[in-house]
Image (cartoon, rainbow, N blue to C red; front, side, top):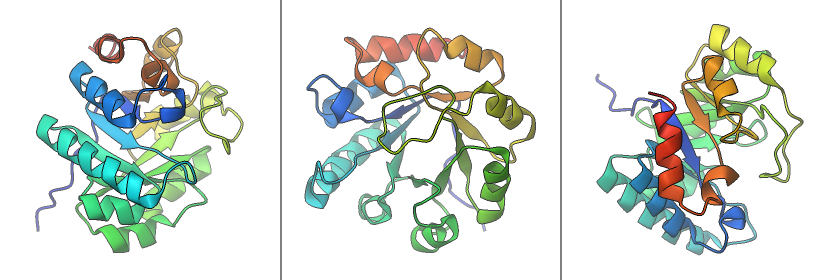
Length: 213
């Protein structure tokens, strides 16, 4: 049976972060990211800032926008919301629902991403059934409250050589250090505050995307 699972893309992996978006809503920010040519967008929102009803409403609109633009749409953590809006996948952390259980819920045709912080977790992700992994945080980052210490570029170098799955490099990556990440072989890279906090989000995304050419 042919799977209709999306292919994990190269380029900039966008993540919403309303706290850092200078008063702009997730919808406004996403619209600009899409305009800039982002290939994949993740909705990341932590409770209790928003109710489930508010998050569902945002995700419905983001799903509509991403579908129209041919952008892959991933929901962080909330498997139920991902199912309700028919997102392309779910991203979970090491302490969230196990990948095998998420797969039971969302089925074979959706992407599951798993955050990893060391080689053992990268290898375990394959056995667990993840489709791609997050590799990081490469540099120190304040974007998440519960973030682990920076793992450095050594783990990125390991991932480029040995990671059994496609991966997104993440954590403290900025325009000034993205070349260090790309030069080591990363093909999908996530910048959060650098994009959502930019004056001109679309132009920033477009400029960052051109670094992959």
